[in-house]
Length: 308
Length: 252
Image (tube, rainbow over all chains, first blue to last red; front, side, top):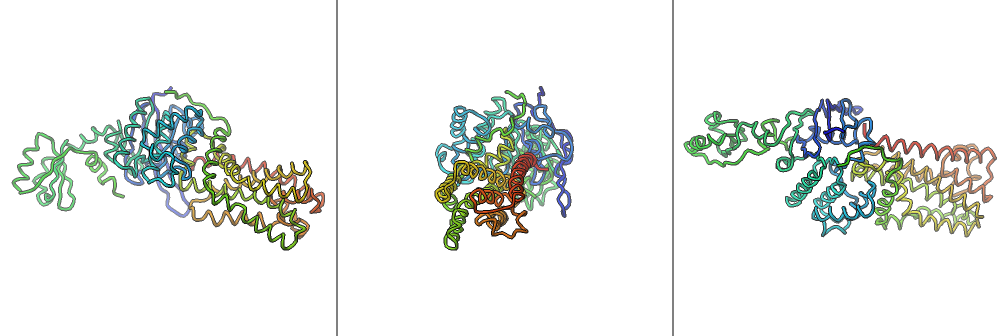
């Protein structure tokens, strides 16, 4: 039995549409996910994250390459993979004419769980995701965030060995996002493996044990969030709102990112005092903070994650 | 963590998904209340124009109602796929593609079959069907439903935009359910074109019923065409829909 929950080798997907140019959504992605791991796929819109997730979850056929889930070839034996996976689709919605309680329960029953197990897990999932107050209201009357929580609660309740979540916390408030994070951590403690895509870099930082950044169908970097942040060249960032004109004075301290009149300098802690001295000498105000995944992403990809 | 892999059995999850869909449909009170409006209007027209044909029209209404369930399958399958991504949620799991298709169709049938049974009882009161004739009516209604659900699910996979669904789906099912001799006897239809309508599931089923009660007089060859055609069609359409459901569970 494979120690890997998921393994992809040189996975490619080209969308061919009559009358339109072909689109290379995946251009040779190789990655592995260990059992019990929480892995995040990061990338801008159209980078290929959802395509990868849909291929891995048996919903889309690849153009070439191989992909295995628990050692089983996804493309050749999707029916053998499906019992062991569960998916929160991107922009998926619960049935509008079911309540969250009905949605979760009937979904578990459709997956083959017995009545008693389905009932117990439904109640657990409702509590865990903070849906108790709206559990008996039709989904059509719920807010966007509550509907999304219902989707996540539905899939989490399966406790499937491998869960794919495509932007699971989109539209949720910060408290709900943290409930999802804690639920996902709990699932991996029990042995499930989680692969998620997200646009929230703080989410990837807080939740993932490893991450892959995908850009234009290629994996351009992989590792832990800490690895990625270290690769920027320092652990602190100094933001100088009026510092762009004096950027040449700061280049020797580390990477500089100019945004209009502002400049952000990445600096090692031991050189912070020296840099601040230069800033004061130029009568510049400065804010100091830790380097986040945002800077790391910008450094690696060259563009913000929100930039199309 | 258990990760031994195995294949789900054919039609796995059908019953549970049937109840899911029935629960969803049961909240659609307005759709349920209006489900027999077209049939009702046509029955009123027949009653006004020629009351002697009301028995034929009532039997036709049963067949037409079962046929238009395919339209509901089409609408629902396309809507929950496009708008809710329900197919992705359910099919990336142990629920089989054929269980999804047949569960969805059967859930709709369960909720909407009540008024059809009422029309069937009314037809029985008017026409005085024997037990055998009643059995044939039920069988043909079932056959027409299988054909319609199979056509509806298969067509649903062609839609990419919700706005297109409503217009085309009602066109298809109403034209094939109303234009051919379903609400009126086969004998009133031009004889040269009869082989065509006898190959359409709703008019073939209605013609068999009309022959049974003596309201239509097709040649033995025409009756054979209706019976054999319907038998072949129901098997072929159902098998195709199952294979199509499996094939479209994954995009290419």
